[in-house]
Picture 1: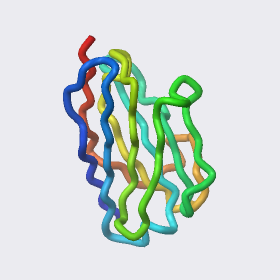
Picture 2: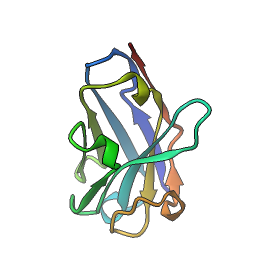
Picture 3: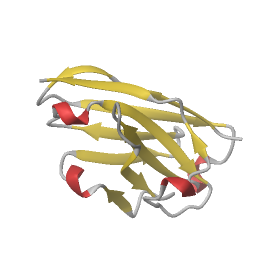
Picture 4: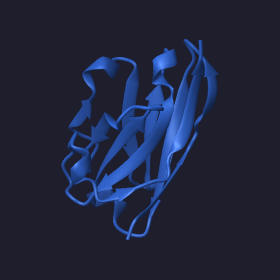
Length: 124
C-alpha cells in the first residue's frame, strides 16, 4: 500500500502562487509515476500534470502549460506542483496520485493510489 498526503493548499489572490506537496509512504516511491489531478465544484476530475519515476518525461494539461510545474524529490518521497499566475478558475480540490507503472500517464484510471486532496481557492 501507498499512502499519499497532500499539503500546501489554501486561499490565494488571483495572480499569486502556491506550491503543493504530496508526501508518499509505504512502498517504493521512486519507482512510481506520479500525477496531479483537480476537481472543481460541479465538474469532473481533470488531469493537471504527471511525472515519470526519474523526473522525466513530464506531461501537462494544455491549458496549464507555462503556469504549472511538476517535480519530484525521490530522496524525500515527495512530489510537488508549483502553480503560478493563479486564476479564479484554478479553484479546485487538488489530488495527488501514484501509478505503479514508472512512466507518466494523463489517464486517471491508470493510477493506483490517491490522496485525500487539498483545497486551492483563488479569489478574484
